[in-house]
Amino acid sequence: MDIKHEKVLMNNDAEKYPAYRWVVLGSAWLVLACLVWAWFLIPSLAHYLLLDLNLNQTQFTLLLTAPFLMGILTPIIGGALGYPFGIRVVIALCALCAGIIGIARISPTSFTLMFTLMSLCGVCYGVMMPNLPKLVGIWYPSRQAGIANGIILSGLNIGAALGLFPGPLFPDWKTAFVAVSVLLARGGNLVGRSWQKCSKGDYYPYAVSYHRN
Image 1 (cartoon, rainbow, N blue to C red):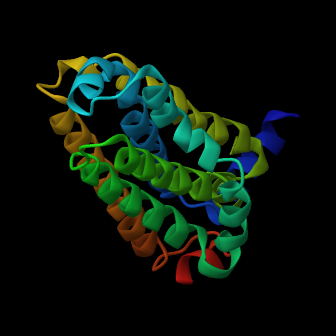
Image 2: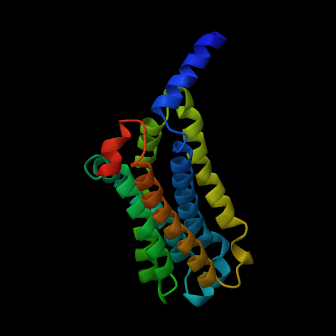
Image 3: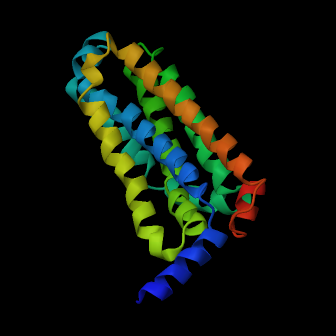
């Protein structure tokens, strides 16, 4: 591909795909990173949870496994919901619900309720995940789709690392759950507000139906 052809492609991309797409991508990245962060706080705070909730090793393992179990079928549901309701609505609602559920995790005093809340976190994760590639397909040209997908997926590893390493730096496990969950809920609010704001401007036409749903 010569330089002249490359410049033509870049000009066409600038016309069809607004620079605001990076804000959209960043808000989605924040939501995914915080959701995984809230999830992976569990193993790093194991010592406190085992004592305060009176858990045995099997129960603790099930708490960490619950979101994975919920992620088996829920992505199929999430993918189906993205079309009629729009990816903005699905991702924002999943983030807000996961934030509320994350805060509610400070209330359980037994394994059963904590397992239920962790399972609900897994539902939010599973429903949201298949809509993230749709975001890239709508907002990015094919020549940037790989980079955009890589940025989003980096949120998985960064979120897991934040959960596993700095978790014990919080004064207690309830403070950790609340702090990360509030950030997650704010991320969901950012998704809803930033994408809605973008729908008022000039942007790639395929995004119209997803934003106005």
